[in-house]
Length: 171
Ligand code: HEM
Image 1: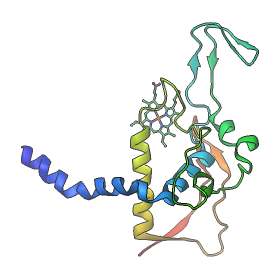
Image 2: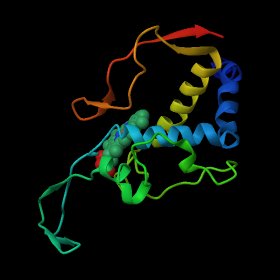
Image 3: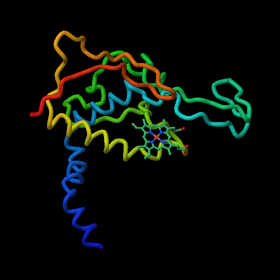
Image 4: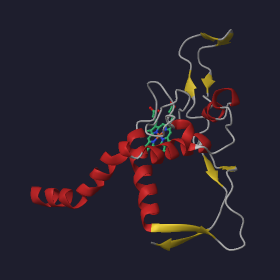
């Protein structure tokens, strides 16, 4: 039985190698960080209940109240980002483009004890998904159709893109 497992590991080992090269593809990583920022797919995270009377910047937040962290506002604050409306991956890169610079206001998975436990899985999946698509397909706009916009549509608790269509041509 163990041979079945090791056989499968040998077959998929290249996937782990892809994850290892993550650090050597700073622009790709910065692109994904910018997607996290612009998309803010979980705009108000999950509500949390205040366990004791608390004060924040002069406001009393009584015990028992539900609070929502506005991840969307944090990701679109002009005082923090300068030009939040622009999709600009290089905001996460060092000036020579060789390193990814993490930003303390980028919080797609929230923060604290209850932050998303699926973060690493989600990051790796997105990296593999994006790189595999771009490695294998050329993605083109449909003739005569407008390009997809960065405007977002409201799902139930997540934000999602408006419907769009593209043509995927195998490379
Ligand atoms: C791009 C993908 C994802 C994003 C942006 C995301 C974001 C978030 C956010 C903002 C929260 C709320 C944290 C808080 O309330 O402080 C959360 C919670 C959670 N996420 Fe994710 N998540 C993603 C993918 C995943 C995946 C892949 C899994 C599991 C495999 C997962 C499992 C969970 C669970 C179980 C919680 C609740 C944690 C708790 O309340 O203790 N998430 N996520």
